[in-house]
Amino acid sequence: MSSVIKINAITVPEDSGDQLGERFAARRESMQGTPGFQGFELLQPTDGRTSWLVVTRWDSEEDFENWRNSESFGASHGHSGGEAPKRPVGMSSELWSYTVFTTG
Ligand code: HEM
Image (tube, rainbow, N blue to C red):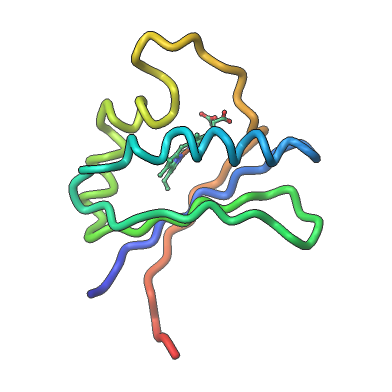
């Protein structure tokens, strides 16, 4: 099945990656049942870079856009549910869009 791949590259201050990882682990469940969402991986850099990659896969562009504009996007990002807002770990982020061209 073809996939729409959306990668969020989050740049964090040095040594704060663990905190980012913990926050993602805590929010994993919130993605369950999202229409068209196939899964994600949070990739930790191992070469000294400070950008972590959130690689997400979707059935379609539209499924991704629907999620981004939904309340569950806010929920996955701690912007709802009466939680006290936490200071974000990331300093900046960039969204990249890919599709699988070929696999080996
Ligand atoms: C490609 C899709 C995604 C986009 C565009 C996106 C967007 C963002 C942005 C802009 C940030 C940094 C700003 C902020 O801290 O609020 C961020 C951080 C974060 N995202 Fe996402 N995200 C995506 C996927 C996901 C998924 C699938 C999850 C669920 C596990 C998730 C959970 C989080 C968490 C826990 C943080 C860390 C917040 C912090 O720094 O404390 N994100 N995301």
